[in-house]
Length: 227
Image (cartoon, rainbow, N blue to C red; front, side):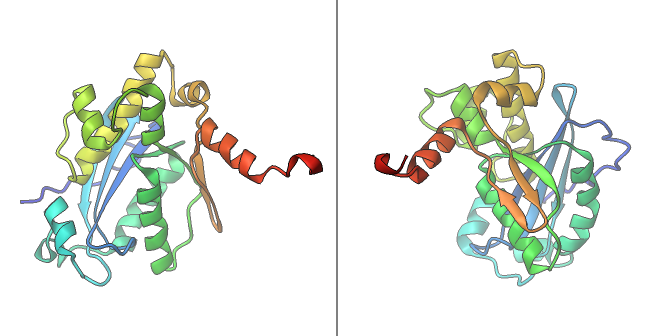
């Protein structure tokens, strides 16, 4: 049985410094959300989690995706579609400085696709990919995927259960702060040269590392004879 946890009221999680987010999808269609997990960070720890099942807009479930997360059509048949859950979640994102996701290009891509499908405006928010934090904090690991990071750091993880994934994502950022001696995520990002991604209505900028920005700069520099 899939256990759901309600999204807490704003006053319960007031003062959170970040929210970690994880989506599970029903198919390769990026907007086919069937589950969302959330973890609130405050005072250097995860204070609350939430897990909601969501009915995808077309109810097409790919067998490979089902084998990964175990969610089947009958589990979500009578659940709300994304806009109802988004209405609950948006005030939290607006009240919190930073959104966290492990492999943020996937989760942010899923979010943007769902917003586009339902003709909802992109929110204004900053987000951080914790894969980039993991690569900076533990460069010698062979893999920085969520499962490998949770095993390396001793974090509890029921992989592809969205709230557990979100809590592990938050745990990676918190452990990196501890090991780097950073007081907060802003200081950690400065130390590692990571720039948060940015979403606004009609605009998107990806989260980037210093190395990625240097590489992009070199690719777009004019040739020597034009400098």
